Image (cartoon, rainbow, N blue to C red; front, top):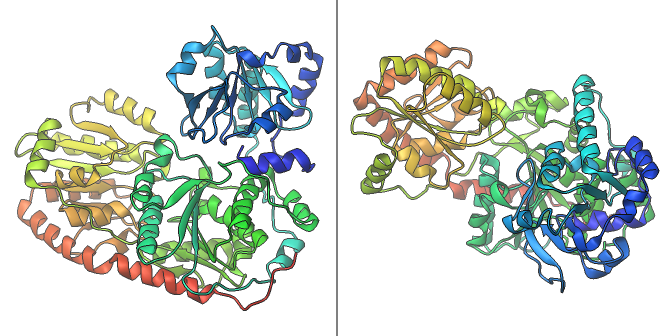
Length: 593
């Protein structure tokens, strides 16, 4: 758990209503097994957390120092006698350095963690047990809980099965009347160039994350003070685009990563926080604390969960202008990404002065309006900024094709998208299988990762497509992949303005996409092909037609390059966004809570 929420929850008795501490049955069992507590030897314990804990906190909570600390960032003030290793929270199970693996179970047999119970994966607990760790000390809640890892992992399995059987659409965590009244107050508007904070879940290889980074770079170049906070640590895949910010010296880190004394919240603010469900309250505390320490003029949030966290944190900390960049389509289409409190908070946001909801496509904006019951055209549209990448040379493309084992004349399809349900990767495999029957020398270059990666690999092996499809994983050389391909295929169930369609047109790989969301707004009729999302035969025909007609592909590729450069100019997007920030500046009235 990040530092601000950890510190505040130590001193303020928030209701433990959403799984912060271990479940009551486990706490009761821990009480019966209390002798286990005496067997926690700090000299044989690793502490797992996502912030850098100071010595004073460890001595207060653990009554000493652990042998190891696993955390996502490098220590700024390493503690003498403690060994450190990097914690990788971007995977399930959590990972850490091989040096710690080697110390288990010879030197380490226990793990202590500040992560809440509902943040811990069952697979992580099972993985720790397989490594040789025997017990886990869950430090959240009063009293803290020590459990055998075998028991904790088994209980996680039981919880998961129960959750599947208890599917619900009930809205919880709605804004109370106190929250609604809070929104009626405003704060002093910014003067001069507004200081901007961007907030999102992480900086993985998604389109919204790349848009955030490109916009932040443009704003920094224009002279703005820009920072980026994230909900999760920027390690591994979660920090994919961090380099774009590091290049121009934009600070990027997850909120609460650096231990500081929690900014004082008034009693009325603490009551408001107590009314929130824990999965919303904890990240709100961490972000609101960061904003209180150094308040910006504008908070620009990206994607649904960070949008609501940012909305609540901004109003709690008195940020005058809030922009919520929504996902390609509303959560009703993506139930695995939704939370029961999202819809009610979006409705609240749509009614508030100083708050703007935007989408990157007309179709996406209308979908959100319908979902939350907002007035038509109340959600604005700001297109994705297309930052033209460096076009790889013919020699670079030829070298890449050779590396991939692609021969001259082989038709090549590019797939650049996450392997998640809304992208329909298994349908992509279906289409490739049919096309290969007509074109035996077909090659597919597929960049992306996601929750369905295992299922995709299994289908590729089952259908004998291993020599046709090359799964490349998460890549940073997407321009080369597209330039080495003839067509780019996107078969999504839902889209906003797909960045890969823009990039494919610029790099000469003609896009073929399903007609969903804003996909049709990302290309012109003469630069790509749109096919109904349920027309599998139509997708196959479109791929075969373009692969068999090099002259048409070349004509469409040239037109696409010119069209996308004109329609999605970064300077236009930056200007529109700054105009929106300016419009959101509110009258000079101080926030009173």
